[in-house]
Structures are given as structure tokens and as C-alpha cells.
Length: 248
Image 1 (cartoon, helix red, strand yellow):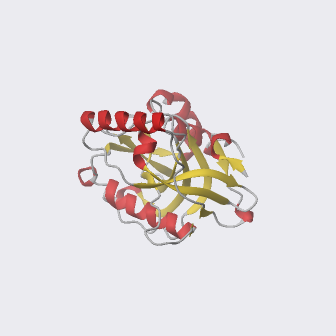
Image 2: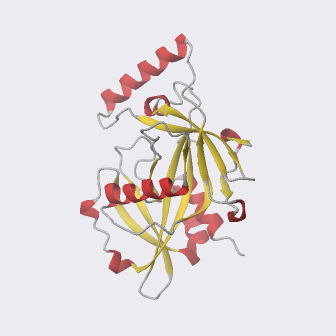
């Protein structure tokens, strides 16, 4: 097992070890009084600064076993994630991020990026793989989630954040991506739509408040694009673009 805080920036997934699965191993650990008070003070300040914040249930990743592609996570809450670094709760949210692939007019494979709104928790104005969002804990007493659950979460994020309805049943896990400043570990799901950019018909007006723009980047130019636009990309997207663009 690799602790969530020891994962490499990009951890490729070995498909021969089986599909990625999520084991839920418990709930949020108790905080001492000082930390609990710091969490509440910081959270109230965040609500005053940005009413878009909303507390809710999340999954916090604890470790990853590459031999079985098993992610261990616990139930936690968004508030304990968002108050960092001012209140050091050591929470890293488990999220899913889509690499949505479509062809341009010349037939080159391109990946979708979204520009984050300044109303988001972090990285306002920067570009990332879109969509992306935390994986919801099950509302029942299940103690495990499957790759299909992650795919369903991605489908929901596509609709909510970009106004898109795409078939993600064939989405495959290619890597785990660590966002240290954002305190998240993302399951990167590649969705090869087999469609053209024009036919997808991305409607920016249908997107919610989290994105203010969209663009497509050719995969065969990914490494050069990541280097040229490093300051415009969130770190994990920059890392994954550079990894995807590495020579075989």
C-alpha cells in the first residue's frame, strides 16, 4: 500500500492488475479541541468570503495498492478539506477527472480543457481537464465502490458542469493524479468519444459557475502545450499532459 501523501504526481494504472476499485474503511478521525476550533473559524471565514461553498459528504483517500488497483478511502466532509492549509486536517479528497477525447477537423485526437471560475475553492482562472469533481460516498451502507460508480460520477459531472451527455461506459482508468495544493487525488478516466469536436457541440452557456471557458488541445502536441502554457494550467493537468505526451 502507498500512503495518499506518498503518491507520485502521476501514478499510471496497470490494467493487468484489474479494474480500479474503492474500499471504504471508516469515517473521519476525531480532532482535538484546538484543531476543531481552527476548522470552524476558517470555515466561517470562507462562507463569508464566498457563499458558494457548501459542506457535504466526501471520500478522503488514505492509500492505494497498485498490486490490486485498490484505493482505500474513508468518509469525511468537504469542510475539513476546504479549510486547509490554515487548519491542517490532512484530508485529501478522492475525485474523478475526465480526459474527454474528440477529433478535430483534421482527425487529430484532442482533449477538452475547462477554465476554472474565480468562484472555485482554488486555481481560479486556470485551465484543467474537464470535468472534475469529488466522488460521492454511497448513501447506503456499502463499503465499496466500483469503476462503474466512478464512471457514473463522471457522467454526472459532465452534465452538471458542461451541459454534456456522453456515453462513458467505456471510460478507462489511465492514472491517479495528485494535486498537492488542492489536497486531492484524482482518478483520471479517459473517454474516447469517437466523435468530432463539432458534433459534441459544447455549449459554454450551459456550463455552471465552475467554468468560464473551454478549449481543445491536440494530444500529439500535449507535452509542448504543457511546457508553453505551464503558468495557465493547474499543476496536475500540466503533469498529466506532459506524461501523456512522453515518447513511447
